[in-house]
Length: 150
Length: 278
Image (cartoon, each protein chain N blue to C red):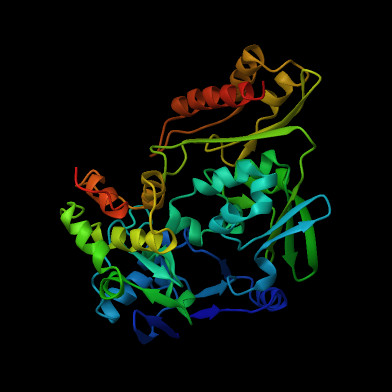
């Protein structure tokens, strides 16, 4: 089936199987490889993208349900007003191996758009669906909460 | 491949009558984990997300009705649900993480009929009524009779969950929810328990207890309820309820836990929730 939707600042028209994962559409058909596959089972959050502004797991979204939607990936967020946050994220050591980073950036940015000064507790709850096995989350939380260096 | 995206409930019901092999889909969070190969073999789906009659929360006489494709995020945000059914909000907050809650739906949790579905014991404890829609019209199914076996429901071929009705609890009622998983968030339950009840004149006057992940379906803990009805709420009643609950369930060993642990955890959780009524 043919499905049209917007991706970052552009438009996409994809002819594929209705149940094809948005994750595969982004990476393999549209070349947007910033979105990572972690578990592929909705457990890790690595493939998080925004759909009409809401964070969703692209491994669990079928192409069928993308018609007319607005998809934002980590590439789109990196080009937009998230610059300052991303620089902070690097400076605090929020990135180590990098596998979880795109998903964490997308989820964190969705939180910051709704709540520019979240508490640690709010940040932790927002990230409940994003696994990071390197950083212990400390650098990530400091970047999201814009805490000064200790 | 047939992939229908109807825009009205009538269209849905007509399509399902013409082709009962269509698989109804909503948030797809349970469906998509079957993996790409299985998904590519699916050749008939009907997407319910574009059907306005199936979505949203409405006040009706004596309760609230929640549309089948209402997401857990919408349930968490609803002032009406927060005021009347905090146990459902608590369950919605622990279904996966933010991303899952944005997509997963209450009706999907019900129709997928996993014994581990987090919202399902809450619906049992709240004595919900399912409004099912089929080609012959709407039909009400008491939720206590909805789950008929492992991943089986009382829905007939061509029927879908349209909405679920939650009757308001009498003044002075309490509700509680507790999930035990590998970690706080984004984990499938090892044991999940919900309670709704009321203490009057120092006695447990009403009590509905329900649990998930301890039998082939979500179950009411009727022996535990019976064991303590009429007793004064406190440690003795809580012990009785916990022990009765552990005896009446039929958990299994699987990848997430063992039958022994589930029985043990259920006893503790039921005890704690009943103690909370005091």
